Image 1 (cartoon, rainbow, N blue to C red):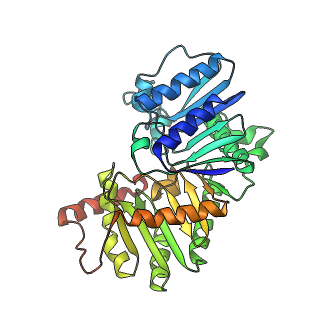
Image 2 (tube, helix red, strand yellow):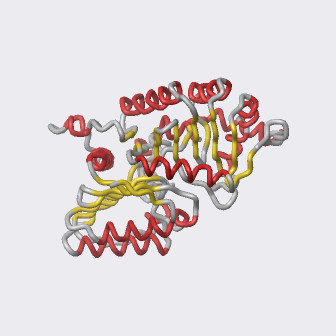
Image 3 (cartoon, helix red, strand yellow):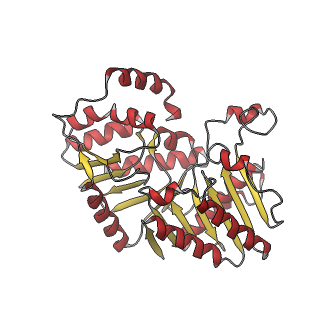
Length: 357
């Protein structure tokens, strides 16, 4: 099974249905869980399932979910376990001074995974927050072998939060991903594998590269390769947000527009709502998940993406890409002037801390 969840309401109903059907385990890993009606509804259902004997593991990020953590429910059921990835140290958070957490403050858990009964999962760009229902997002409901790999990713992250080194476990080998349709970056080897695969996909591109991302600042070799492919005559397109939740990231992306437009890259800015979807289409190879097309996702944050397998879903996402282009502003090289001087100066300063963007 592989079902594309484009609409926010569709995602919500599939998520509630999936959790409701759980009979053994529920594993949730999310960057953001907020204080909204959606998160309240999901949390209420998770607590209900835990009270009925279902094992619930909820893993949240210390920065992304900091507001919820400040008001999180107390006295959770025994079957409901909560883990926080790199909690903020005092005085930023509520824990005592922790220099280790402070040192790792720029490494975050950016996963968006929900796994039920170790058989079905939802993965994609959506956090458990109200904005995810309103923004332009993409998620996928799957079963099969890819779910087994998502479980490995979840369990590695959970053990990390518990302070346990998975390398010391007798079952260490089970944490190595075997399915080439799942990409993560839980360790340096997975990061290198993901980088090389993307590089090779771009290098071997025969027709087109279509990227959808809310934040654009790839490693320099990937950036140069996109420009080279465009100059070779390949159809290279970027779909980026006109409305954004992080203005600085938009400034940084726009600072690179001029050189890309000059080299033949087609750039579009999506207008209807905030664009938060993350998809990569290279010919008939499509990657969907949590990864942004920026240095944070390549180098620092924990991400997870899957390759689509169904032909009809590949065709659907390609059609959706062109549908979104119709609701976007197409930037023209001869008309685009670039950011104002002050913004350019600020971008130069921000780029000194490129690993944060």
